[in-house]
Amino acid sequence: MANFLVIGGSGVMGTAAIQAVRKTFGKEANIVANWYGKEDTGLKIENADHTLFGDVSDPKCLEDIKSIATAYDYLFYATALGDVGIPIKSATQEQIDRSNRLSFDPIPMLEDALDVGVIVAYSTFYVTRHQLGSYGAMGYSKEAIEKWTLESGKSGHACIRAGLFESQSSRGIKLLLRKSAKHPENLEDPLIRSYFENVSTKEGVDRYLEGIINEEKELFGDSPTTAEDLYKAHLELFKTDDPKFVNVCGKKTWLSEDPQLIKDHI
Image (cartoon, rainbow, N blue to C red; front, side, top):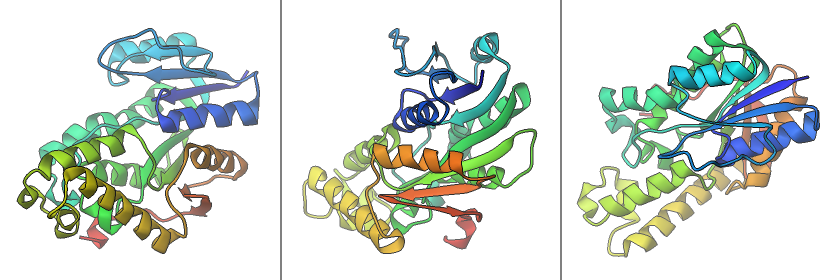
């Protein structure tokens, strides 16, 4: 029986991973899905055989995972948390370290602690103009993931890099921008600030999102990205021999091998 571990199984990306596993490997696949929040609501993740609640950086959570299996064919690391809503270049080392604690650091820890065939992590197009102005400390965590993707390790490494889609992270950016935009002078990036000048904060967010969509269409040919698009990107991952980066933006999916380096863009 093939085992699959999804960290962040209740989110948009984790859901896409679970659906793609079921489509590709069928009912025989044993899917262990982890999620974490303010409290355990007893949630059972759809299409998962086992639902585990817990902070993956907590040793108890790791023991719960090991109690089901210590060897997994695939591990999908689909969770992240960090300071956003500010320019990437403005993130402090403290903010970056705090972001990495959940957004990156558990990945090599899990690779060391478990026997995993392939670990799949997730990134964004964080060096686009709009992301540079608003992705904050998370930009450095995603860069750490992209660098890790190209490193050799005990497990195979792969990364799905996605364009704009509705997620907890994107909602967090919008909320922080709306809060900051009550005083537009607090928005450091001039492009981001321009969307909020002389309009309501809601209209400013709408203009900001429209700006991202227009930039992604210009750079990559399509935007925004839907849950169905993310699901299809996972199917592409499974079809590809030793993929590095599977890129998805709107309906477009393509492969690449180079990381996005922040230093080349700021």
